[in-house]
Amino acid sequence: MSITWRVPVLVLLGIGPVVLRPEAGTVWLWLLLVALLVALDVALAPSRTTLTVVRRPLRRTRQGDPTTTTLEVTAGRRVRGVLRDAWQPSAGASGNRHPLDLAAGARAALTCDLRPVRRGDLTADRVTVRTTGPLGLAARQGSIDVPGTLRVLPAFPSIRHLPSRLARLQELDGRAAVRVRGQGTEFDSLREYVLGDDVRSVDWRASARTRSVVVRTWQPERDRRVVLVLDTGRISAGRVDDIPRLDSAMDAALLLGTLAARAGDRVSFLAGDLGVRSRIKGTHRRDTVGDLQEAMSQLQPVLAETNWQRLIGAVDSFGRQRALVVLLTALEPSAVESGLLPLVGPLTRRHKVVLASVRDPELDRLAGRREDARSTYDAAAAEQAAGRRDRTGRLLTTLGVDVIDADADDLAVRLADHYLALKARGLL
Image 1: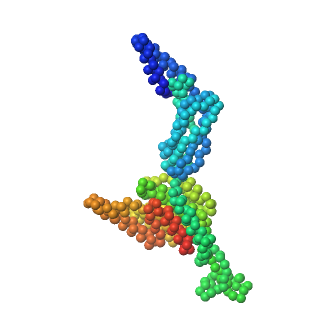
Image 2: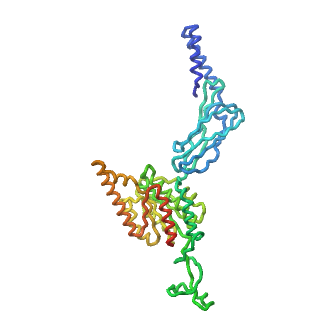
């Protein structure tokens, strides 16, 4: 139960009778009258059970994008009051308090704005209804369970770069440029043998029907595999410019996955730390970005060292065919050299491997400050940390890994451009 502003006003109106008859009995009699009116108003106020509240189905949304949720309210009798649609704080609910003034049998659609700031499934708490009595002195209050779950997908800010990269991809596919022929496994055409051709390419049946020796020509495969490996271990929880490394890595994976799917490649996805937490086996679906976002929506960093042996083993479970394997992890010397580095050699012999890492620009900022003794020591420590990262990067490069170490805003674009460059060189 709750009271309205009218109750204090009604109590103050009792000053008149008290002045006319200044006795304690007059005060108590007036207070008793007010209490009886409040009790009568509460008894006559509609119960929350007179309302039927149904939530409309919720659509998926991306992290940070606005969306809405709508409640359909039906009144069994005349109802006046307030309705509050409560959500967990990370849903970013606003405008969720709605005044009610419904006649018997009337319906209303009440809309609440949401702007989620976290990935995953966000749930509605309760719908609280406060109904006032006919006198407007007091109100009943109760809660109704109206379930609602909002699926929040990872943010995809780099999608703005997708049109320009698709245009470059069309050029590579031959719609705006000359087709590239080379070593591969897809048959292209027949031509006459010239000195230097591999005799294993001779088509003896075609040669028998002509007066010259004919060889087959091949083109690089267009249907290749791309495997995205997302590290959700301890180092992915670090924040760079107040954005978790994991979020930046997801953005890069989404741009590359979308681009590779448009190119006709089969995109597989793998995420894990101590074990595999999410997996998508490569398909030719056009809605690959939707599948990737669904697979990433529930992922959160785990404060444990990543078991790279399990993740690399899971990559092999997708098949032995050569693929582009993209490792989305931080280029942290201690973590890479102890866990990943021993496994990279065998992996590069079977696949083309790229390591994409979010670089912290704070290291460069610290290295450039030398105003006093403290900032000079900080600069020395930053240069030492940067030197260790560069050394780890060179070790990976020596083993055949392409290392992309870029700021959070540039990582997705750099990774997509590297993929296109590999395509142009016929390495994919």
